[in-house]
Length: 279
Image (cartoon, rainbow, N blue to C red; front, side, top):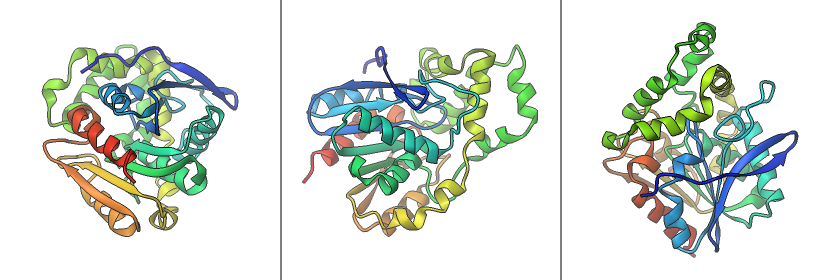
């Protein structure tokens, strides 16, 4: 496995910059992370996809990773979907496979409904669906007390991230100080922690739940993949969505939790590659 995703490129969408990583040649695969991650989530998936003859584009959502972290922007999944779709158009990314993890899966679902020219296939990985979000540990950050908690000079976000990844992964031996530091870096310091708080508080259930009727009718090949031991997004949400969509199938990965790209990157990369190149 590699340990670094490399130096990002940037594209302006509106008045803000989005960071992205692009590599490989062939049919396009677009990777969208969730909370509290970034494109770093895909570092052990991207090389395999590139070697399998795919062009890979991994984007940092606004407010995350190396993208801008404005204090006055809407960071809800609907606004994120519009930004990602605009970025794909500006980058002249060929229509291909849209892949989303966690809230990135919600972003991907809305892109497929509102900007169908952006994707011909959809992969959802331990994704939000229906009213499954925000997850309680994220939802509680809307409480006013967290302004002072995260604003305290000695607050250590890395401890909270370690706790979250420990709960969200089966292979906890892969949780290293270097990995946690890479996820904490974009949210480092007081300004970074407040940016994380804004991102968490922007998640609104109704932005996805109100659109599920349209999503269930999406007539595109869809692969829904779930870590069998996901404690953040129960697998029944994925199974329900797969059963409702006309061209979807559901796959569980054993011995894996919510952070499937961390727990089983090799298995996940092969699933995505096979699906992206299938007829």
